[in-house]
Length: 174
Image 1 (tube, one colour):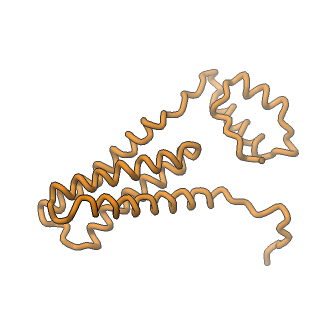
Image 2: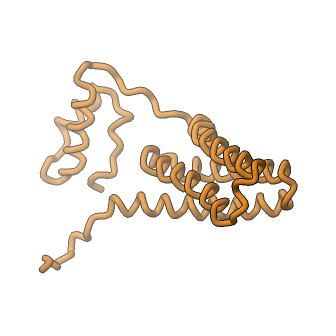
Image 3: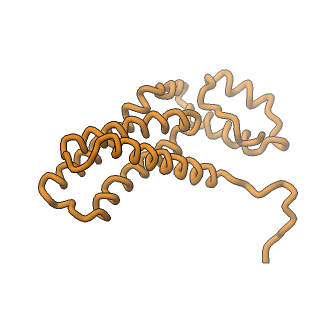
């Protein structure tokens, strides 16, 4: 399908070969992406390999750890007594992490999001064990469900950014 091919994995020689073979009229989006990829490599350097699955989980989990630890600090000092504030501090950074992951790592998004949701759930359960205000297993399960829901929403929103009208769409607008 036009626009689905990822040219970032190809070498410069492979990109040039693909440019000579690609039908510009039949695949205009792929042609445009191929030219853009060639422009980014004008100095002859190759693009680095994408980060591994474990590196993605570690990188994004670090940001979740910072958000959850800031929540713990707020709770320790008594600044986060409002459930609305607790929910905002817990969900907004997590949702932003999933949105960033969905946008910049589309090919590895599903499995990385599951891994990050699991790590985030374990972090929040560990923090609740320190706080002793709730049962860690309850927090683990509730956070796992919430994180998976946010990951699904972020993936869906990112996929909707790339939607195009169907080719048989005859509506021309007002």
